[in-house]
Amino acid sequence: MHRYISAHLKKLFLFIILTAVSITAFAQLTPFEKSNDKNYTATYAEVIAYYNALAKQYPKQLYLINYGTTDVGKPLTLVVLSKNGVFDPAVIKKQNKRVLLINNGIHPGEPEGIDASMMLTRDLLKNKKLPNDVVLCFIALYNIDGSLNRGVSRISQNGPRAYGFRGNYRNLDLNRDFIKADSRNALAFMQIFNTWQPEVLLDNHASNGADYQYVMTLIETQKDKQNPILADYTSKTLSPELYKRMAAGSYEMTPYVESMKETPDSGIVAFLETPRFSTGYGAQHNVISYMTETHMLKPYDKKVYATYTFMQSLIDICQRDAKKIGELKKQTDAAVAQQQSYALNWALDADKFDMITFKGFEAGHKPSDISGLPRLYYDRSKPFSKQIKYYNTYKPTVTVQKPLVYVIPQAWGKIIELFKLNKVTMQQLQHDTTLTVQTYYIADYKTRPKPYEGHYLHYDVSLKTVDNNKVRFYKGDYLVYTDQPVNRYIVETLEPQGVDSFFAWGFFDSMLGQKEHYSDYVFEDIAFEYLKTHPDMQRKLDSAKTAQPKMAESAAAQLEFIYQNSPFFEQTFLRYPVGRLMQHVK
Image (cartoon, rainbow, N blue to C red; front, side):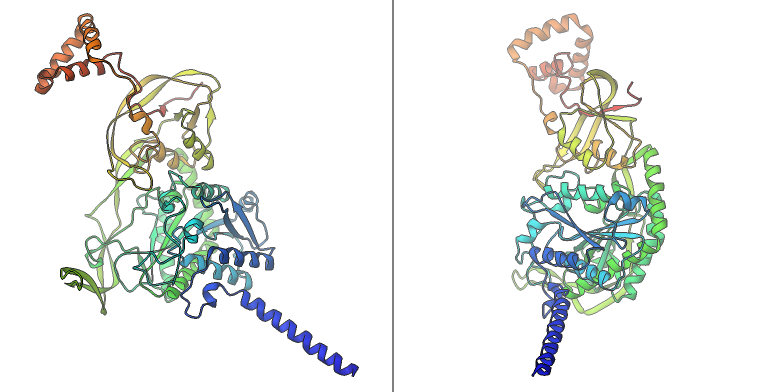
């Protein structure tokens, strides 16, 4: 009897062990993998639960850190993988290790990166394949707000069955928020980005647009906009190697498809990712930046596995070139700190292009079943592989020479806070003082007729520059010297003509409004006395009337002319409040 009980207990114990192992193995599967048709993406709760389970299983290699609070009230979770168990960014830098930051779910309806990162994290830990010289940082799910708003809003997309919404809780597209930082999500991202200071950034997406054969397309920092030191490495080494490895992994890749005309066979144009986008923001900080774009019409499982393959390829190359990437980042930081001229806007050079092989589908037009009018369609029974033009050259249209120092009045508090988050070194004036600065006046600008991401964007800004203008500044105002590695971020945000400058986003709109004016019947007498005692003003008025006949016929226009050219006119109207100093402040 004793032997029977003993044998029975042994079998029961073995069964419990096997069951526990089975449950553990099953628990390591992601929600995507558990789904029968591989057409499911994890919810926010499932994502966090999965990483928490992995963290308990691998406490020495995986660490979860919560940053800030998103607009929906939940913290932004960073998943850190470190082979030697060091999770302190300062120590990691001292150990001369690289940091690769991977962002997922900025558009939760494009969730491939969320599911692929969960699988990749598990596999790297399970197979003991963490890189020696690269610390991996995954933002588990950036747009938590949009992820919670689950539905089927991307109607042109082939899977998954349900997914999050593009806008966050404030209905902001977070991939347009990296300069203006309206969302708390963006502020938390900046904290992560500038704490860990990655050398390489990847942002995972899915595309809209034309139909073609590729599962994966790629956006990289446009070579003419990227610092030349980094551009030489990415264009000649890193990017070609990524294309090669993706092809070897059965996911041949092409540049992001933005057609020159209606269809890709007309040629495709390199995407110009300005600083409002994650990769454009990365470029401002001298970070090698990529954005994957899987094709919306491909099956969801293929999009997930293609993203997985790309991330694994990028990790492997970063490990192989870890020393070189670190050296290039230091060289670039030093060069940017000394750089004198900065481009603020770019335009496509349509006269220059490369010829690339493109695998697409024949396109045509046929009558619409709805309207009877011609509609575009792609015929997947007619694939093609042919040479097309790839337009990948941009030229600066606006450049600026940096000042020695920018002076920012403390009144513009949001700018100061963003500069602090972005590790911009600043000094504060210790007393009230009058400084001789170069001053901009906004001579002209255009404004978009409809709001874009919560702002009426300004563009086509022209300036009147006044040198040696004496301006009063006050104790606590900020001095920003332009000898810093983050000079591009400083210059491109503070120069009003920049495509994504703070001025373009409306940060300074209050200075565009005139605050004082006059009563005509009162100013008539004052203006007459002023002309009598200032004959030069009378001559200027006469010349203006001759040059502008309509002014000669308008009493109001003449009175306004006198007012605007007199000391009575407010000197701060249209004056850009940030001063440019050409010499050190004593």
